[in-house]
Length: 220
Image (cartoon, rainbow, N blue to C red):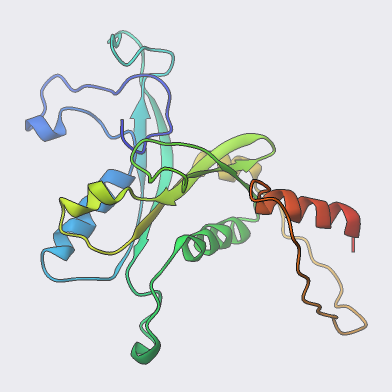
């Protein structure tokens, strides 16, 4: 299924209200895109939405031959969609939202939940533009994904802006959260800032550079 990170088959309802509701949701992202399309038809050009709800799947079941006897598994998820103007504060210097605006929002969620700093690893997920999707990983476990919606999904819905989406598994985030907030004394001396430039090969990721700096810097 598009945008889904869950293994296995979809959960099919025996008596759906209509054909569009025959399968229980495996991802929140398609419905956030649908909301953006609804507003785009009303000439909206800026999209900032989120949703918290359950998604479902039948793990360990082949998508081509689902087994109704297998109990579905539900996951609480957080979906975020961002596109159009990055801010409404200054119309004279309008800037379009990009991947890093959404990445910052995701990192803010982690910070508020007191979850360890995530790692973003490149991946491919159906529905996201090739080369833009990344898995959100904590301690080697994927807890979500982030990426740019493929333009062909947006063109048919009359959305002309670049649109980005993220989906996080809240159960995994809560399990990884630190039990209590940790406080540190204020530094005795002001911080020192320096701009550094690096020349690296094109295939070297930002995460690899960041990890190398943190390892070299030590606890400080």
